[in-house]
Every structure is written in structure tokens, then in C-alpha cells.
Length: 375
Image (cartoon, rainbow, N blue to C red; front, side):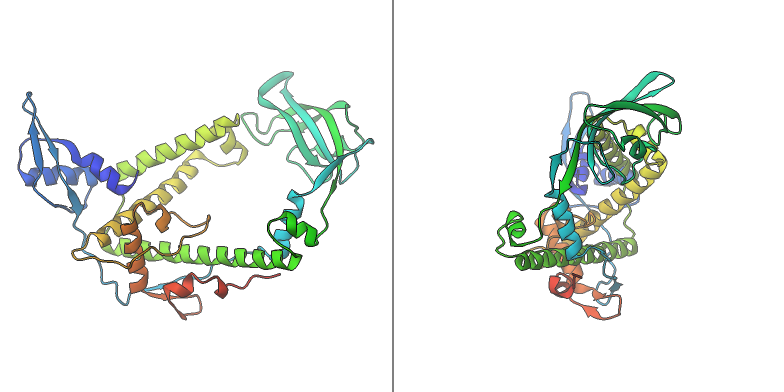
């Protein structure tokens, strides 16, 4: 739910003791905390038989904006250790072929196994896994699995003891029943023009390398641009005294956690088990989510204030869309083209500098050609 949707929902069907606009404003102010509100037009009032009035009011926050011209924001480029050759290696691994072997497993082989864990002779909840593919010798969270798989052939079963590292029985000693269903070798495709053709409409490997270099540069630009958006919006929102309403933050936090629980439940994992496996406290997760949600709300509120300024006519179009790693203040998530224009106006008005102190324009910030990518 966007800030505007929430404001609308809270501003409709508000029951007040009278039709006085000041009383309506005071009631809405209680809902929104300390934010100042302006009634854009006289409220529509409908009196029910019971004598209570349902009020529909169009409101906007009356927030004095700080002077944007000359406001300085410095943002370092987002570090990225990915390289073209590293990306190519990743693509080769995904395109690898597993060939079944008719021999016992050796280090470096890929073994497909079924696992079942018991503690004190009893099956544990969600303690059974099928079709797990593991590279022998690569290390595994289940201590002892690599040593057990060495020398096993397809169709063989055995058991071994290990200490569980996640779930409700984390830290307890369990017995793992292991059944090998397949022993395979992995064949990586040759890094040549034929491989490039498998990855898309590329005639040569050099074309693929060039495309990957551009993709990584564009991603680096998107990360830098998104960081600049977030820092600029957070700075102006703080100076304007904009804070996210606590009950809205809590509502969205509950919705986010419900979505996470449903997603984990779809693969048979409970949220508490997942957090235990990650050795993470739920309060810590709540704090991170709450801070991110508050930043998003405050960004939306600020952009709505800018867009609601009398005579506002921001730049046509929105800033370039960020990549998948961009924070939630990006215009694609801002909700409306007008909010996007408000963000473009903000970025075109402030003074933007890179980590070296050099001036940046919004166009330079979005230009992938500025971001060299290692081979």
C-alpha cells in the first residue's frame, strides 16, 4: 500500500463529533502523527440515521521544504567484485552436463542423494530431503557427509552421525541415513563461439564478452544511481521533518513478514526454523525491515510533497530505471509518474558529487560508460 492509498483509506469514513473542518483536521492529524495537514477542499459530510457523520476529505501534508538549490549530496560508487570472466564461469557452470558414472564416487564427482535425519531414533520435522546434488569434497553444512559419500555407488545406503546446524534441533547430534541414487561427472562446455551462441544471439565469444561487460557496467550504474536517490531523498526528508507513521510501518512490517512466512512455507520451511538456521534473531530481522519500510514511506511522502507544491511541473519522464539491487526509493516503486517527476526534479536541483569530489549530473550518474568492468 502506497502512502497516498493509506492516506485515502484513513481519510474516508472518519467519524468526527461535528462538521467543523478544524475538528476533521485534528482527527486526521492524530492518525498521521505530527504531520501538518491541509484540507484541499471542503469535506463531504453524510449524516447517518444514528446521528454519526461519515466524512470524506481530500488532504495533503503541509510540509515546508528546505531550499533544494545548492544542497550537496556526495555518493561513492557502489563496489562490485564481479568480472566478465567470473560471470562467464557462472554461465558455464549452469550450462554444465552431468553424466552418470558406473563406479564409486570420488572427490570432485557430483552425487545425487536422499537424506533422512533422526534424533534419538525419532524422525524430525522437515528432516527428509530427496534429490540433493552435492559435489564430493566441496564441503557441506552436514559435517561428515563428504567423507561418507567417498567410495559409495548408486543404489548404496549407509548412516553417519552429525551435528545439526539449523532448525528446531540445531546443535543436537542426529543420525543421517544416506541413499545414493546417482554418481555423475560434470562436463563444462568449451568457452568458444558455440557456447556464446547457446547464451543468446551472439556470433562470437567476443560479442558475448562485450555484452556481459555492458550488462555489468549498467548494473554498476544502476547501483550508484539508486544510492544517490536514496541518500538525496533521505537527506531532504530529514530536513523537512518527515517521519513515517508508526502504525503504517507496523502494518507493512506485518504484511512483509506474512509474505516471507508464506514463501518459506511453500517449500516446507517455517520462518522460525529458517531464522534458527541462519543464527538470526527475529527482533533483528524486524529492526532491519522496519527501517527499510520507514525509509520507503518517508521517500514517498517527500516526493508527494514536492509534487504537490503549487505550480509544480517537474521534468517530463522519470529518471532511468534502477537495476534489481536498487533500494525502494527508486521511481519504478514510487507509484506514479508524477512522483517520478518529483524525484527527477530533486536530482536535477541538488548538487551531486562523486567520491572524488567531482560534480555529477543526473545524466552522468546513469551513464554505464562511466563504469569500467574488469575482464
